[in-house]
Image 1 (cartoon, helix red, strand yellow):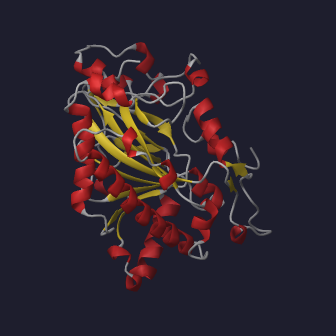
Image 2 (cartoon, rainbow, N blue to C red):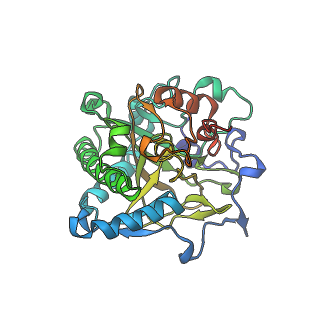
Length: 355
């Protein structure tokens, strides 16, 4: 399958039909420019976590709880990940996509018949889902790394160019795991749960790092870099470059997430919504494209094992607050997500007790 970057850099004037979104899913345009702006006061919360200092924990826990309840997403600063490392992971990712011929990159191609397989790719759905006439492809290429548990980590399957790529990716994985664990503790406490409650429910992290490259698009008003969806796992930590294009759906409108160079964007995913019994909802989001500048993001997903069974935390269930979601085996949830496709939040909504 031809990569989107090759299409873009080949100088096409029109988007191939497989990338054209149905009219109801297309981003708005104004004077042939995709609209991505919104007022600063409409942007998602920016939370200083003070290096996860115990003396600031009560205040941080409260604002994180508010952000989880209202947005399902928030930026964090003073998170402890070195700024140099954030710049390095963006740098090696951008270099992989921009500085090397596609023939070299294809040596690391993922299995096109296996969803979410490790490597260099452009599409993520199962073949049977893609065969549906309604399926539209995203305007992006990506490299997916299986990073945790360590038994899944095989750096020989990651690019050897640029020369420090593998070292940077491994270090980034380790740093982001620490941040994710600390955040789950704060989120648990914000609901009055024991610190370890949500992490215990999730179990050992299955972590993937996906570096996404969104090439310039000749018709951005017809495409999406990433279709509307909520992430399937527990918690996602994302950084993006200066270009912008990530949007979160809130109060019936799409709100652009302004790039913040050294902040980390925290996105609650579907298993978090189940565990919290809907008190905190996963964030529906998408990525739009533009005609002038390619864009890069690095998303680090922290998921349960596929054998894990996820259900609402017992501490949040009572006669007045019955379970809203059915228990699900995470592997079954993943299979459904990749077979049906994301389409907003339809996969998590299908687990509602009253659905």
